[in-house]
Length: 73
Image 1 (cartoon, rainbow, N blue to C red):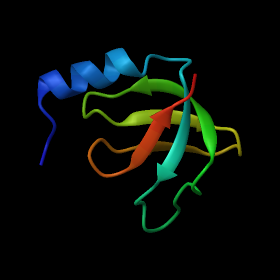
Image 2: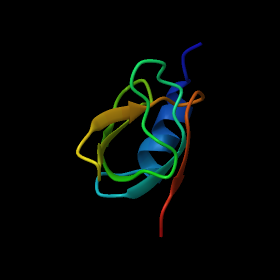
Image 3: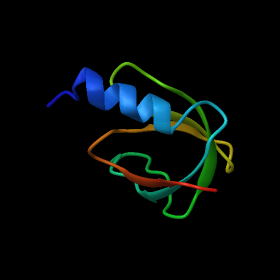
Image 4: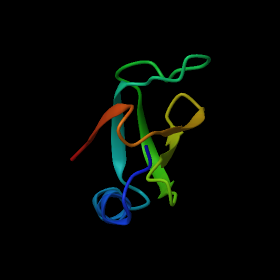
């Protein structure tokens, strides 16, 4: 299922580049980001995936509707 344009627009507004984020649950079966890992948002793509530079040196996107994450203040 693909997110609507409105959902993607909202994610882009909520998570602009530079936003700090924490991974709560990553569903990637091959190379998940560990719970509690923090990173900085690079951008949100047109599928609503939040592309992140993780503090552990990895780069992996968080999928809208599949992964769990939170914005840090």
